[in-house]
Image (tube, rainbow, N blue to C red):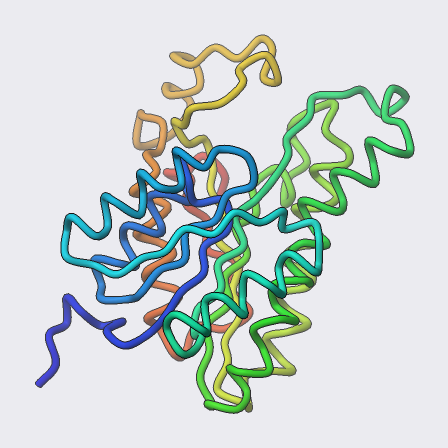
Length: 253
């Protein structure tokens, strides 16, 4: 019998944006389940190396690769490096996002393009790079980390980000139906109000205590709550095309 705590032993995962916050928690959780993990960042090498060290100190296998996921060439190079090191990429978790607070009429064409490139196009670049290998092996898991504003549109002055977050699940559903016969599942992970390190200037007028009181479980979510959801999605072969909401019941449907 296999050890259920090492359900991902022999698998390799790429987790983008994994130098901190939700991405870091996901990478650590997948490594604890036995996966080799590629830690990705684009600006802070120190954070990326720290996560690699944490995983290796716990007995796992990891490498750090700096790559701008909005650059298809850089993404392709990252996937090639992962294959060179671990032999394959079995799990791809897209977790990078820019959350700018801008009124619609203040969004320039360049602002729009930059957010779309990082928050939405990056998924296509990573998925396209890993899918040929997944298809050849008849096994793959793809997770798109979205946000609940993409489903309810409740956060003002974020038209570009909300568009991307909504588009993520559209891509998930399109891929899920097409790729499942090949042994590849695709799902969306949807964090709610999660307590992370962030630029709070992009979240004006946020009353953190009032927010916690509005959530049925009476607290903000933790990054490990989201990591638990990701581990479930990559471990559940009959869950496909699903949006898993991790929000403590703040938003229900």
